[in-house]
Amino acid sequence: MSLAEVVLSLEMGMIYGIVAMGIYFTFRVIDFPDLTCDGSFVLGACVSGVMIKAGYNPLLSLLIALLSGAISGVFTGILNTKLKITNLLSGILMAFMLYSINLKIMGGSPNITLMEDVTIFTNLDPLLTLGLICLLVWCLCGYTLSTDFGLALRSIGQNKRVALNGGVNVERMTILGLALGNSLIAFGGGLLSQHQGFVDVGSGVGTIIIGLASLMIGEKVFPFRSPWWGGLACIVGSVIYRLFISFALHSDTLGFETQDLNLITGLLVIGAMVLPRRHLC
Amino acid sequence: MNEMKTYVRFSVVLCSLLWPFHSQAAQPFKRVCINQIVTHPALESTVKGIVDGLKREGFNKGVNLDIRLESAQGSSSLAAQISTKFVNQNPDVVVGVGTTSAQSFLKFALNGDVNLIYSSVTDPRGAGLVPKKPNIHISGVSNFVALEPQLKLFKTIQPQLKRLGIIYNPGELNSVSIVKKMEDLCGHYDLKLVKQSVTKGADVPQAATKIAQQVDAIFISNDNTALSALESIIGAAKKAKVPVYVSDTDAVELGALAALGPNQYQVGIQTGQMIARVLNGKDVRTLPLEYPKKMDLYINLDAARSLGIVVPDEVIAQSQKIIDWKKS
Image (cartoon, rainbow over all chains, first blue to last red; front, side, top):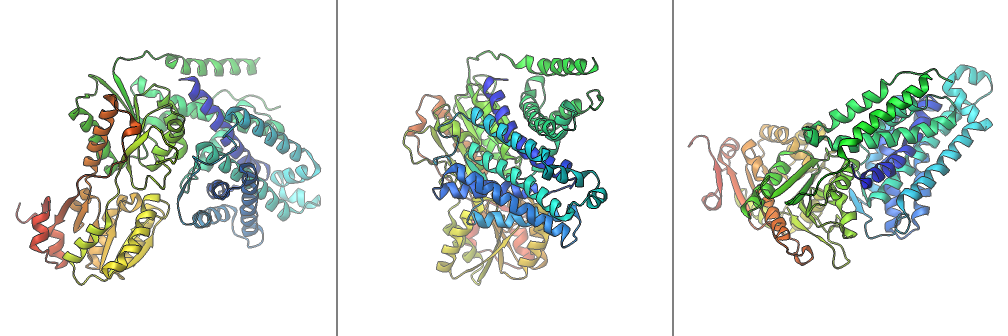
């Protein structure tokens, strides 16, 4: 495995680490199995891509992508809390509808190239830039979850009834949690499209699987329950997952074939999961 | 203590995994790395064509050629990791089969790190594979199918044809550009294009049944989603007594009435020959983008008979392959 592959694994690991943090917000913090992410990931990519094509600043495009993700999360939340649609179905419906919306945003074309446009990686070293962005996002998330607001948010993931009795507006917190989670996922989508130089409407398929696998690998490595550790677990887990794929891509030297890739990656993830369980702190 | 042990174990596992790939000795032969977007019969024959095309030009796998193939299984992030792996193996040429795979090499080709040849990309301009900047190491073979000869063919076989249905995935750039061009052309041929979009293979049976009621014929271009569920389209069309035309010649044996298009295998051969030129020292920058040289016409007379369509003799005379179980 060459250095460049390790670097790419780190870069993509950090991008998907931010996505995993979004999934951490929904699945762990507010305990909401949110499947919007397959759609909101591409939504972020589309918004960022279209804005770059229109000549806007790439950094601004990422912020708008983040906002668009938050809006999609709010809609999922409204479907669930106001219209009383079950949590799984709300996310599925939202992701489903976002496919058409994403195509609309891209003007009917399923694929946009950003190769010859200015992205945030044009003049900056991707590894360093992503490292800084990740650090920033991690600090912001950790801090947010440590505030009173963050505690209220976490309380509804622990026990909704107790939270309600404690004066927490559970519906509003659910919507806000979904908005925060999906904004991070869309931000990750925008980052990936700028990193890869193109937006493809099919690129969101399996985001949930990648994110959850990363999150769970990370939680094995850092089995601590504080939100600061949780965020770090997402990034580290995601990098490990990417390294596993990079490694599995080299399994041809061991006599495996191309189609065995998913099997090898899966086995490596299983290996990571069955590492001896440690006591929680 | 227990924690320490786990960490040690974890890092030992990781190190031992990485160890065997630390160094790879440079080989005397030419190296070609192929990144194929998805495993799919049409793309498989393209890849087979590439290997055979290289063989024709004297590059034999295992003799003087090291050829490496990975499939990205339809995922763009996996395609990116495969491309990075390939670029770091010092290939003489990297090949992107399918739009997204080709795009995943684009970054490296624009930096001048590799020679990129793409294949089976319908709209290379739309995909950014024909850069505006000069002196870029990219060229390739598009599988764009000229639409006018196809429309003429449909009109020759079915002179009363008025409403032509097309089933496509709005998520595929290839198909979207073809539908756009079709809409412009249909007016000239006194046809009305009825569009039906599908987003995944599972949607195809319903979509096909619906559209078969509304049209005189169904046309399937090189849309991966529609092609992967072609049997259900042909089944639905058969029930409604409507013929299916395709651009992929291999699909005629499945029951489509006719296909006028490039043979995917031939596209592969053409790509293979282009790669060979680069391996022989030709500069990629001097090679222009190529389109399929030859169009094949395949006719399925069994399908025609069951639909009560009489295929004109002139069409039969032009065809390269006729499928007719009664005669054979």
